[in-house]
Image (cartoon, rainbow, N blue to C red; front, side, top):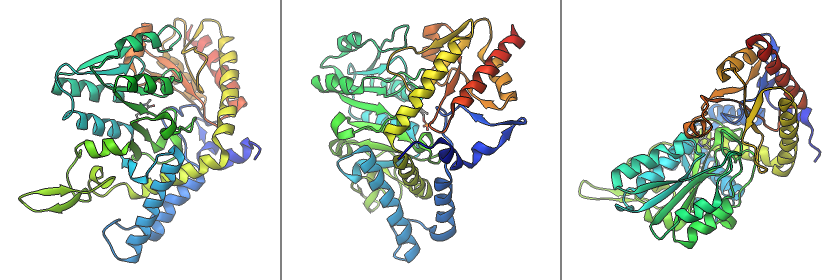
Length: 405
Ligand SMILES: *Cc1c(COP(=O)(O)O)cnc(C)c1O
């Protein structure tokens, strides 16, 4: 199927609105993606036609909702190539999934054990582990990165030992766009018997991972970064870990039997899915995955790489503009600053021209500290962005520079 950008843009109603009198140019896709009509329709259909609580009812609506929810789980299983559908646990998103795993490891880690994080993580893949270390006496080690925003693999290898119990890294840095070599990271960790959690929140919209081939132990992501709704995501957990980790929250849905003397827990995935879940969100997550797969991840990657190359070239023509994250393996994120100008001021001026970029530390303060900067302007592109939108961004940044310097 040819990549028809105009047809794709027509699927996204929000892209035809105006902001401050200008056509919206949405370049904040690393924070959240926009939603196609197909996903919006799926949500409307659910609440219009078969809204009901799942898994418990014998009535027709409940069965229809349960079927749709479990079908979505299977779609997600197929997409990420998990071995079993019950290894896919619905969560409220990436942050929730990480906290669930960190909570589980609080019963596994002992004082003196080591866990490893990378220098380019989102705060949600740092803070829960720090809390875990405080609770257990385990030590947090950090894989350093270099000026280009690439992890120093040889330093990672030095950190690994038989004390290492868990390694957690993002597949792609949301602040820099760097693609990390997760296959090699997982392989090395397994050589010392450590488990690996991959934060796929930033990569899921660009790359389709094969979880069995990667042999990841845990993989977390959020639907809203891949054209689905907010407040829903998944935690993939290899079956052996699903059996080993204790439940995170207690409540309905996660039990087999409850008496006041003793409660036994349900099997996977329900053991980790206490309470009524985001039913509509899960179903719409499935619709989002269908939508992306119909376009095709190869086509998406190819097109986004063109956008990235063009944006990088054009932005670098602006004198005094510096890009952070300059490694060869990158997705369509351009984080930059213009000499002498605060990123926030650029963000404010380009917004006046209808352009949405993010400014600040992007929930990755250690990266900003590394570069000794307060933050960056981050333009993050999706497959529905155009070369003309890149031109609009470049013109707006030039204008901001004129006004501010
Ligand atoms: C967005 C993001 C998160 C957090 O996702 P939530 O949906 O806010 O839980 C974590 N890690 C990375 C790399 C992200 O891009």
